[in-house]
Amino acid sequence: MSAEVGVKDGVALNAAGPRWWKNESAEGLWRNLGLVGVLLALFAIGAVIRPDLYSDFDWVTNNMMVILTQAAAIGVVTVGMTFVIIGGGIDLSVGALIALSGVWATTVATQSFGPAGMIFTAIAVGVGAGLVNGLLVAYGRLVPFIATLAMLVAARGLAAAISGKQTQVSGDQFINSIAKERVLGVPVLVIILLVVAGLGWVLLNRTTFGRRTIAIGGNAEAARLAGINVRGHTMLLYALSGLCCGIAAIMLTSLATSSQAAAAELYELDAIAAAIIGGTLLSGGRGTIVGSLFGVIVFSAITNLFAIANLPTEVQNMVKGAIIVVAVLIQQVRFSSVTQFARRHGLSRPKAGTPQQT
Image: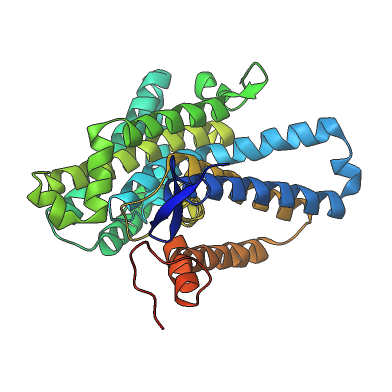
């Protein structure tokens, strides 16, 4: 048993420092464990609703792969969205950029260059549109909400003009096979998501780019005084989001073997919701890629459960909206606030050296 030597910020200290379960750095671990608990609860609900399906091990295994496959494209978009939100911005144009990138990549002219040409085109269109968003926000001083909302409308319109409001079929066998292939039983789309999430984790946690993103989101003025090029970095964040949209466009094109201007509708809602559920603060300066990944899986599991229960899409959208509101409300009740409340009402020990009121 370790002896307590004091109290810091309402947290009991011992010789080895704050107890790990009360350490603020463990908050992300607790949140992720909570999301795992939510997944287990969803599984239990599904077992109650459809015991005939959930008692079949093969069906459960295949259904898990379906959930992960459905979460793959939106997961890639969420990685880019997480960077933008941590940096203090928001990107409402991701769904439209996926549609524009997919439509541009599946034109007859682009398909004549083969799969490499289609992939390059989708990524180039996504990055280019993301750079425009970044320029408008960083150098045009437009509010991110307005700049990306304008891009949403413009990109949907351009995609409709390019496609003639028609569905463009992909005739490339390599692109179409991406969604069908598996490596060691794992769908290639899921592998792409894991690779993108892994690279995003390294970029956020192990590079100067990630530290600057957190610094800008926490306090842009302080970051500027510290010598960080805030405008240039902000522009790169939106370009990164566009890059993820380009990758997601190829993944969706492979799933549907086609693309259209109406593709990826409300993807911005899903990506923002997944990032918030995963612990990313809407005010910026804080968030994790792992948490966002769990958020995507939880959202996909909820959608899958609704489909199994035969609930209409309208109900799904209403529940998704409610989940976003609840997640934001929970963010406002931070651990420190709970600690202050408990201290104020005598439910925890005061700081060492704090005079006792009589």
